[in-house]
Amino acid sequence: MQALIITQTIMMILLIIVIIFLIRQRRVAKFEKRFSYFTLNSNIDSEISISDSFTSDTISLLRNLSNKLIKIPLYKKWSNNFIKYPILSKNAKLNPADYLTLKFILAIYFIIFLLLVDLFRGLNITIVHYLFFFIIVFCLPNIFLLLFNHLRNNVLKNDVTRIIGMFANEIEKNDNLLEIISVIKNEVNGPMVDELSILASDLGNGLTLDEAFYLMYERTHINKLYEIATYLKAITKTTGDKKKAFSYLNERLIAEETNKEENRIYYYLARLISIFFLIIPPIGFALYRIFFADNFTFLTSNFLGIMTLIMFWLIYVLYLLILRFIMDGERL
Image 1 (tube, rainbow, N blue to C red):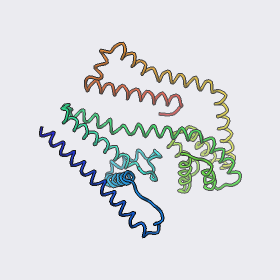
Image 2: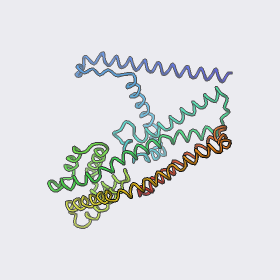
Image 3: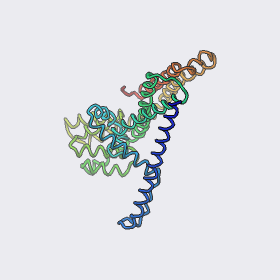
Image 4: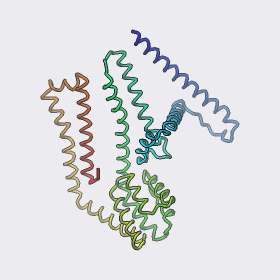
């Protein structure tokens, strides 16, 4: 009973703090708007909504916390593992340190929620259970990050042949690579614009063209970019003729696309095989559920069964990723 009273008190205090915070932010927004008439941009109505203000302040608090944690060497080294994801670039709302901090906050919030549920319902959750769920919630954002990065790279993969063709055309008229990249950026859209900006920045920082393309490959893991970087490196060490290099690369990539079109039937057959192997585990699971219903209750009636079920699905996700790598001919 005392635990329930303490929990309710804590929840009420947290609710009051949130309400006061929202009211304060709304008053600040109104105060800024009142004085905006005396500023240079007084003709612009820039009223800030509660949601926008709350989001902005949340990111600001997250950034302040990250700036303190990044001073810890181990934390900084850990956050550097996420630099390879463009969505967590320096110009994005969340940088790698912010992302790592957010993962910890989400995991801690979930553990607090689980603790409150345990106090209310008396689930008798042990420290092992808390640790298990902390790890699950902490790792869950990585799945969405990998999915977003995979979708982004698929879009980039379709643009590689196009930009190499643009390089081959533009380099015949102008041998200034930075100006060529600037022209190409105006003719493309999507994530390729960001990649070209990074490419220009790398060249401006003194990297060679092959090194810049290799870094693009490391960010995207697109095999075409690895081939381009390798060939440009060989040209740099021999003739150094970039015009012939891009002309050759353009012809080679076009030939690969043509060959892919001619063999599309085999490509689709391979995709059908991958889909077949992909649906085998869910079908097997469904059949097991139908014909062995008594055994299935173990997976939903106690915590050990739920953990086993979650482990099965995690293994299935790993199976899916490995299958995807094999079909794409990528390196693990």
